[in-house]
Length: 137
Image (cartoon, rainbow, N blue to C red):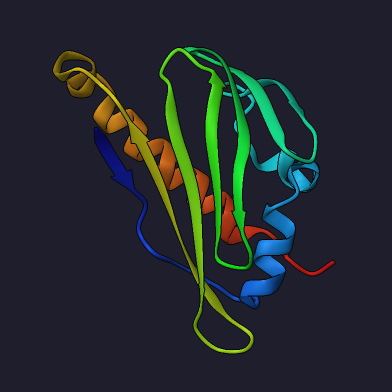
């Protein structure tokens, strides 16, 4: 099992606001304009799932567990590379928190060699977008 983790990101909003926003995927609409159009197409989402087309193929992720207010876990239901993804949030102060993203995938050594760098870069880009969100209602 290969595991990829983003750097820990400082978020200038309380943990509860970050969790409330990210645990409902309908809020993706608020960041649609920050997503790279050349890499993400056919973006569709509802409260519990998100689907999109990428250069590697179609992918669909569903929230499989919500652990309020600290973790949201996703699993792929459709993907050229099946994986699990989770967002962890911890409080720092009453008004700030920190976040880390993790992807865990079962990859053979050949695929791991090719996918390691793109997956790590994608994870950091997702973390960049999540760090820039205005988490106020």
